[in-house]
Each structure stands twice: as structure tokens, then as C-alpha cells.
Length: 77
Image 1 (cartoon, rainbow, N blue to C red):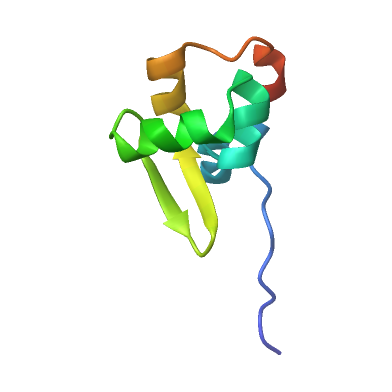
Image 2: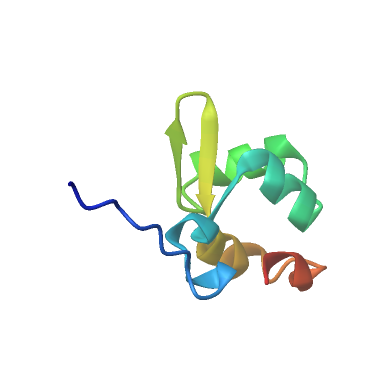
């Protein structure tokens, strides 16, 4: 009998690699910025981002470095 893969969830939400990036839409909502403002920051190299298909993935740490923490930081906890 083959061993089954056991899923181990991260110990905290913040520990997951997936929580270190946000989509362009999520960033716009969290930082109260227009999507075009964030696209300008991406194009200018002010924040670290990459495109996956049609979705932009932006590094949370680069957003914090450029814009400061989001006004409601509890949403990222």
C-alpha cells in the first residue's frame, strides 16, 4: 500500500510563502491606491512584482518599503 501524502498547514498564516505576495487588486484595496498608480510603480521598478498570466503578483515587503504599512495592517496578519 502506497503512503499517502499528508498535508501540513503552516503554523501561522504569515508563515506561508503565498501570503508574502498580493495581487494588484488586493494591493489597491489594502493600500487605498488606484490600480494604475500601482502599475506605474511596477513599471518604474519601485515595487517588486511579476505577472502570472493576466494577474500581477506584488511583493508585500516592497509595497511596505515604498508606501509604508497598509492603513489597516490587521488585514495582513
